[in-house]
Image: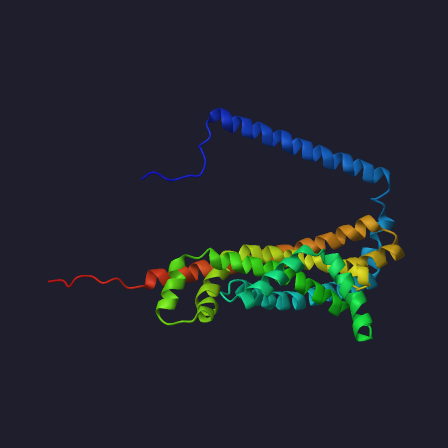
Length: 283
């Protein structure tokens, strides 16, 4: 039985060229790191005084922990609200009623087109003018992230639902479900498996976009790092450490998404194998 592949099997010459290219690429990357290390050493970036705050200053970690807590708080609030808004807007855009579909399209296109930084700043500055009192930077950041990411998630949800076979909708309608029940009970649970990678990618973007809170003086992780840099005077070391924190969080989110995807595949596979098949009676 022949195995289907999406590429041509490489011959000896092609494998040799790939090996040579890989070795050359690795040597070039190592050379770049070596040059960077020499330049950093020449500029005194490896001196012990620049790394001493990480060992001798416990308040550094306390401030970073506070900034990380603010970042995660804003991200969690925005994620929950944006997910709800995105599902509602996606259902609205898929509606057959123009009075529901057209406003949903207008909202999605408007907030997808606006720069997120301008949106956050506009909400923070416009609220006191309209209401007459100041707005907490956390709320302004969460609202801006919710509106922008809700519009993006709406398109992800809509694409996931439209990617399902038409037979799913036809079967649901044939047993008497309304269009709303079809979307909510039949299509959306199946579409989650399709759109999970895109949702996780958008969650990573949302988490990183919390750093835009600096424009309204929200003490998230990056702004806290900027304040610490002014005190300790080691920008390269502190920002590298903050970058590692972001990378660790995003890797954890990606790992969680992979675990959920594998569990869903096992659930779907086990459901398919458990379906009984009729066999003829043995005489």
